[in-house]
Image (tube, rainbow, N blue to C red; front, top):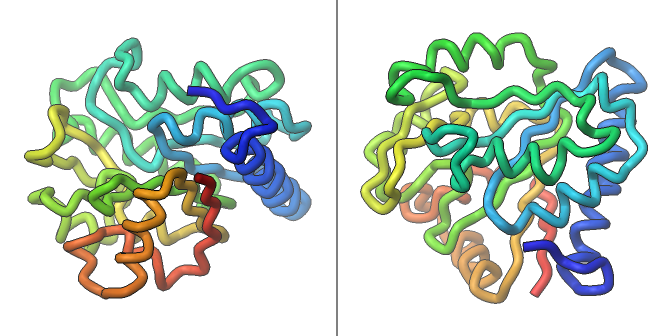
Length: 225
């Protein structure tokens, strides 16, 4: 769902887009390429649209995802489809997008190929944009995931994830790889998400609320009602 620029969420998206564009410009002043890591879901759509309208040297920018459902890109559930439809438009279509899926039947089979794609990107990322679910998950680090401990601890860049609360298998950047960014942003909307984040700030059990894995980073919070 899009947000008009005169709504609180629309203004938030515009402010975040300008901050991200400035970060990318700053890094591109001293390096040839810059990497942006984004998240899926409905919340970032107006941000994607606002960022796509920013004047940037898009051909020097790599874009990838924090996580992805293991579905074809033609699926309405695909984060890659969301990015292509709302961010990689107009001049922004010149950015180099790296998806996290393959033609393999499972993420466990495809993780090696996707890891190879990620190795060629301009790490550390300029910016990682995180979202958060009502259960405190971020990327595909879910409280009920059997792979949560692995995703929080491994030095590998990617983890295949199976989560009882989610219908599709997923692939996610590990906490370690997400930590490897110059800037971290949490983009959330609604009173319910604000309440969950307040709970996260009041405790330290990362398994209960995995967003806590990023509270030790300098984390810029972008929130609107």
